[in-house]
Image 1 (cartoon, helix red, strand yellow):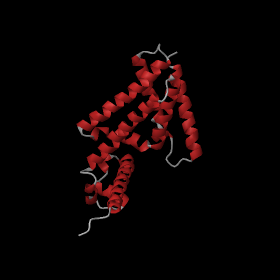
Image 2: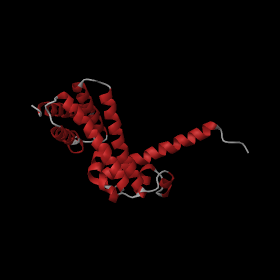
Image 3: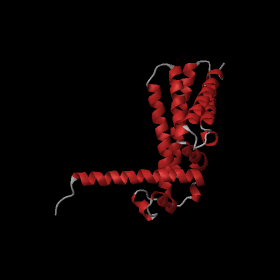
Length: 205
């Protein structure tokens, strides 16, 4: 019996990875639209052309998909923000970079904002703690930059400012239509950025 050619294994691995990504994307879209409790595995499978039971080759249950979505985005946000501040010693540049980075997320992945706002409570406790820990660390990155930018701002005030900025930036599920044109999205981005910069650079004065 001949062994499978290495390229066959590579193709199978790639196909499995692609299917997993398709399932996660479908879960993100459906859960954002309907809510976690209203979505069945069969709905997610149907969205990508597979049966519900076929999903078990990739995920043990629906809860595992929610974990991947919310732990995944929290981890990516923290890693991205860390990379932004590591790339510059200038506080103003770091703040602008953080705002741009968060806008990329808020405009590009608004479904995850909906899911996090509404369905975080459905995570198992260990995953929920992991998300909360990453969120706290993300906030503290912003707090540090804000205090470097203006050393008269206290820690509590900087934290309040950061949360207020997130509230503004994370308004995209309600303020920016998914079907918007590139020009409209660019305009929304410009407005949100200007408002956030103005709020954060004037609040401590």
